[in-house]
Amino acid sequence: MSYKIRTYGDPVLKSKAARIDNVDGKVIRLIDEMHETLIDSGNGIALAAPQIGVQKQVVVWDLGEEQLAIINPEIVEGDGEWVYDEGCLSIPGLYVEMLRPKQVLVRGVSIDGEIIEIEADELEARMFQHEIDHLNGVLMFDRLEGDQRKEALTEYRRIEEQAAADAAAASRGGLLRRLRAE
Image (cartoon, helix red, strand yellow):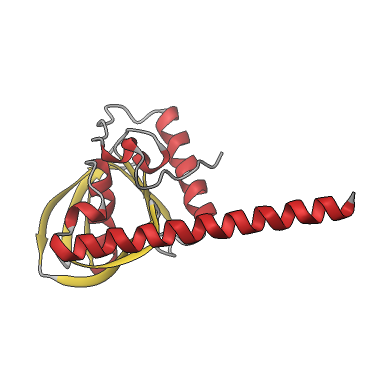
C-alpha cells in the first residue's frame, strides 16, 4: 500500500515522532509501505514516517544500491561543511541552498533489531540529517533565516499556486472532453 505524502502546512510534519521499542511485524510492514511510497513518489531518495502521517521514528532510503531502513536514528557526530541544493518530498518543487555537515555518524536500529552505525558522507549524510529533522518536526524552512526563508516561502507559494492553476486547467479540459463525448 502506498501512502499520500503529507505536504507543508500539515501539522503532523511539525510533531516529534515516537521512538520504536520493538521491531515487530507492524514496523516491518510500515517499512515496506514506506519504500513503496518512496518509489511511487518518482523523485525522492528518502522518506521519514511522519511524511506519510505516521509518528514513528523510521527512515527509509534508496540511493540506487538497495532499499534500506533505520529505526530510531540519531546523529552521533558530524564534521565538515557542505553546501547543496536541498529538496523535500513534503515541499514539492522547491530546492534551497543549505549548509550542513559534510560527514555524519548515524546510530540506530536495523530491521533485525540490532544497533547499527553508519558513516555517511555528502549526499547520504545530508539525507540522514534531513530525514532525522523530519522525525523531530523540523522542516527545511525551519533551517532558513531572514531573507532566505522569506524568499523560499514566497517561491513555494508561487509553486503551489501554479500547481493549483495547472490542476484546474486539466480538470476543465477533462470536463470539456466529457461534454463533447455526450
